[in-house]
Amino acid sequence: MVDPNAGLPPRYLRTPEAARFLGLSGRTLEKHRTYGTGPTYRKIGGRVVYALEDLKTWVDRGTKTSTSDPGTGVVLPAKRHASALVAYAGQTRR
Image (tube, rainbow, N blue to C red; front, side, top):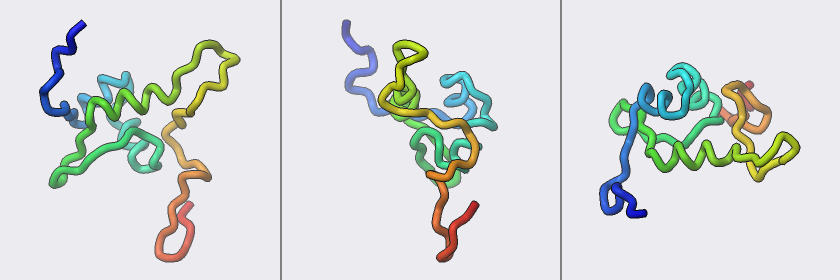
């Protein structure tokens, strides 16, 4: 089957559109940005946009074939995680 988007530039979605695409609330997607657990995003001026391909890649990290399948990746919930701590002014933020 031919991809109808072949040859077109990447499609970018604002936060509300991206949240609808993922089946999440806009606020949850904002929390993912804050904690560094969400999909890759870009800032254009003051606007946050998500490439459709980045959203698909992030969702695919959580692909499983059964409840006992550990999968190859993890999609973390939108909250602070020890692995997402960031060094800030020489100190670790929590």
